[in-house]
Structures are given as structure tokens and as C-alpha cells.
Amino acid sequence: MPKASLFLMQIADVQIHKIAIADPPLRSSYGLHQPYALRTILELRSDDGVTGIAETYGGEAPAAALEALKPRLLGASPFRLTGQFMDLIGGGGGGDRSQTLLVPGENPLDAHPRTYAAVETACLDLIGKSFDVPLCDLLGTRVRDAVPFSAYPFYKHAGGGGEGSDAREDEYGEALTPEGLVEQVRKMIARYGFKDIKFKAGVFDPEIEIETVRRLHREFHLPVRMDPNSAWTVETAILVGRELQAELGASSGGYLEDPTVGIEGMAAVRKTLLEKGIDVPLASNVAVTCFADLPKAFSRGAVQIVLCDHHYWGGMRQVQHLAKICQTWGIGLSMHSNSHLGVSMMAMAHVAAATPHLTYACDTHYPWSQEKDEVVLGGRVPIVDGCIRIPQRGGLGVELDYDQLAHGRERYVRCPYRKRDDEAEMRKHVDSDWRRILPRW
Image (tube, rainbow, N blue to C red; front, side, top):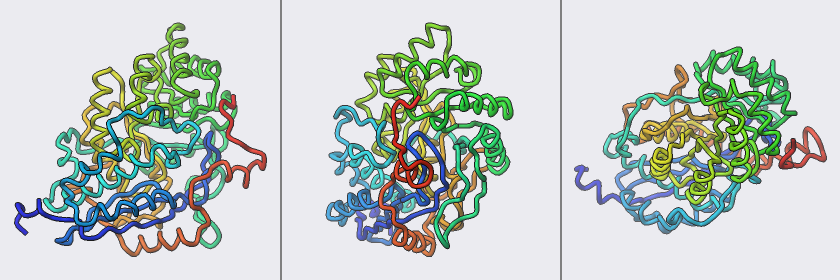
């Protein structure tokens, strides 16, 4: 087909795949990860046979939201589609969309932006493949060919995820002590070459977690970021900031992420630390999750780094808008992650490659997923020297392995989980009376 006529292409078919992937028993302030994480794969096939793909949050609700859009998708042009769907993300207002009390992917106020982002990614992938142009170049501002990611250690119970005959080998082993976390990170760095560490806290008494950060910093001499997911009071967050000013301070390349509940609490922590001469930057992907949160967060000095995520900020171009706002205000930018496979991995890499104001290495859960679950043709996306390289292929640069996709669908049918519920998993395996309490310490 001549390239000029590509602009006339239409969406001829829409496929939505609900899949499950094994997830290890990782801990956070939300509770305990279930044996399976749920994902949704979207395919948009054009009338000339090219298919664009996207990956987003899983379970019944995200798939149903995409199913509801099918009448609007079929027959539409991928060049105009996301513009026609701007009603899903609006103008950036709408008040508080905090996910403080909700695990990522289960906030109903994020539902429309998440749906829009999946459609946008699949459209851009389709267009990029049609013209043989990498997706980040479609976004127009590629500034890096290799995107740095961080090691992402968690306190973890024994087990590799999955259940019954599908139970997986435990690559990293139990890690419920500072020593266990050090060994976990040692394995991640040996395999992937990470140059930064993002540590999930909010699980044990802060004294234990302070010691964990100290040991990670002392052992690896790498920037460390600490994220307790709002588990602490303002007073405890101030104490941790004071104790870890050398390890988490601005000069070390570290930060403290969502240490306490809400923008007001974050502002109080930052103000008190600065009054004590302690410059530990505060980051957020919980208190700040949409454009409407930015004026309050920035004007009150509550947040010095925003963690973007194209999955729920409303797509890749919305992340680019966010980055420019952050740059204008002198705010740093990193990238949030959730349990995911290679399609999301490449989408994250492309938007990061096309976002000049990305001042910190990105988060990724990718080391926690396994080859057995990967739906990308050719297997897992390689992480070399802590980076994902942008392939010189059109769109995202990856295709689907339909045999693996079928296995993921079968796994979804077999497993009992239809939404993420870390509290229920904690009550099932650790403490029958456990509830997420904010603050806990």
C-alpha cells in the first residue's frame, strides 16, 4: 500500500485478551501479592493487516472498559482515534484521584485514563509498524537510545508465584531481613546490571527498614530510593528522613517516596526536614496521580519528584506534557511500575526515550516476571547494563507470541483471581486479622 494511502487506514478488528502471570509473594504496605498478577493485552488490526498492541492492568473491569469501546474503535482511523477519545481523559481537572488507599490498577477514578492509554499505545504501535518508525520517534523527541531502570527489591516470602502444578521456582528466595534484601539485590545486579535501587518499604518497623537502606547503600554504593507507600505518620517520616539523610539525600541521588498520607502530610515532612537542614527529596505516585494534583503539590513544596506512568496518567503524550510542567517548576521526574510483561516494558522504554526531562532511572517489576509467562515473540526483553535499548524496528519493536498469549488466557481462566487484593492475600497466608492501616507506624 502506498504510504499516502496509509492515512486512510481503518481499524478492522479489535481483540482483548485477559491473561494471568505468576507473581512472587512480595510485601508492601498494601499487603501481599497474590500468586498471579492480571494483565490485559489489546490488539488493534488495520484493514491492511497490520496489528498494533498494548498492555494494561488486568482483571474483569479493565477488559470490560475496552470491550465497551469496540463500537467506537471499529472503522476508526488510528491517526485520529485518540483525539476522538479525549473525553476519556478530559482537560486535566477533576479533583483528587489519589490511589493512597487503592492498589494500582484498582482506582475507579483512573479507569478512563487507563483505557485511553491502552488505545493510544496500540494506535501508535500500529502507525509505527505501518511506517517502520520506532514509536519514540513518532512522539518526536527521542533523546536517548538506552533507557535506565532500577533494581526493585521487596521484602519477600519464599516462593516464585503461581499455584498448584503451576507453582514456579523461586529465583530470589525469601528476603525478610536486611541481609536477605542485600542478597536479592546482588542477584538482580549480577543478572541485569542495574545502577540504581528502588526499595519497597512500609512492611516492618521503620528501624529495620532504616537498617536495610543503610546496608544496601553501604554494599552497592548506588543511589537508593525508599518507598513505604504512605505507611508512616508525619513524625515517623521525619525521623526516617533524618536518619537516612546521607543515603536518601539529594546529593546521593536518592529520594523518599510517599512516606506519609496525602499532600498536606508530605508538605509537613519536607518543611520540617528543610528546617533541620536536611535535603531529602520527596517523590510521589500515590498522592499525585493526575494533573489536578500538581498545583497543590508543587505550590506547597510537598513533592520534588513525580513518578509518571503512561498506563494511568492518560498515555504517552500526557507523560510528555507532565514532564514539561515538572521541568518548568523545577520538579524531577521518574517512572512508576507495576507487575508487567514485555509489551509494557517496551512502552515504558519508548515514552522514557522520548521524554527529555526524565531525571531518575525508571522503576520496573520486570525482573519479577518469568520467561514462562512472556507474551513477546522471542522471549523476554533484554536488560543490559541496567538499560533497555530501543530496537530499530517500527512501533514498540515487539510482536506477540500467540502460543504464549493462549497460555496466559488459559492461566487466567484457571486461576480464581479477578482483581488485585493484597489485603486478602495477607489474611490468607500471614495474619488472618491483617488490615492495611494508614499510618501503621
